[in-house]
Every structure is written in C-alpha cells, then in structure tokens.
Length: 179
Image (tube, rainbow, N blue to C red):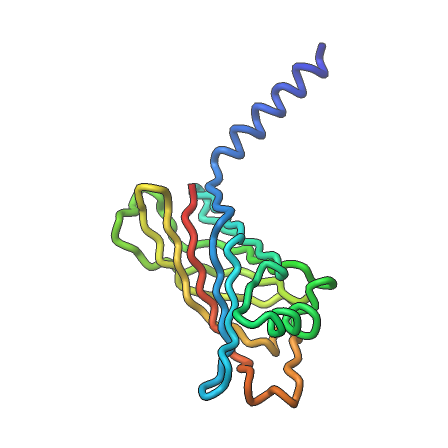
C-alpha cells in the first residue's frame, strides 16, 4: 500500500512539474552557408523540439541532423555523410537561459531577450549568445532568432575543393510557437 501511495505521489509531482514547461515539437531551423555567385547551401528542419520553463527562463532545443532538407538531394547526402556525420553525431542540442524573462510582460509586440547557453553539435560544445524575439500570440508563445556560428568551431571540415563555395559562417534562423 505504501508503494502505491508513493508511486501515486511521484506521478502527480511529475505531472505538475511537466505542466510548468512549454513545448513545441514543430519549431523550424533554417541554416544557410551560401557564398555569393555559387549554388545556395541552405536547409530546413521543421521538426525541432523547443522546451521553455517560463518560471526560470531556461530553454532547450533539439534538432535531429537527418531532419534537415536541402533543395538538392546530393547536398543533403554530403551534409549527412561528409560534413555533419549524422550517424556519429545525430543531433544538435542547445541548453540555455533567457535573461530577465518574464512571461507576464509578453504582448503581441515582439520583445528582445538575450539568451546564453551551450550548443552541442558534431561532438563539440560552444558557448552561444543570441537575441530571441519573443511575443504572445493566440496560439502560444512565439520565439524567433537569427544568429551565426562558425563550422570550424565545431570541427566541421569543409574540403579544399569546395572551400570557396561553402561559407564557414553559418547563418541560423529559429522559429517556433510554444504551448
């Protein structure tokens, strides 16, 4: 009987804790590493998970590398096999904290918040700072961001043969609605 009560209390506590977090499983990340005058190097992943704890401002995201889609299938294959090595490093994870986040102050007009955290990609961790535009919408909390990272910071090698066609600076856009 004590075990049943203990399990019930633990389940109730975990459900209460889970309700504190806001989640989006359909956030989008678009990255671009294009160089002018050459073919566009751009991909989109529309199945990114975002989790926000509105009480603490802690935020996390998870993107499966094989979820990125390119216009050219061969680029997608090279991305997964040669650059990001998706079988060995299947995901990118960001864990951070939004500075001075206040859920109650959100309106339909986006407000800028600074986020600091660590991005784990290709087996490497890098400190990241970016600006998030956060607003309240009828469907939830909308988050957008634009920032850049360097492929070399994550030990992603760009072969000499294509070095002038693929930028080391990778521009990233994030969009999601948390509920």
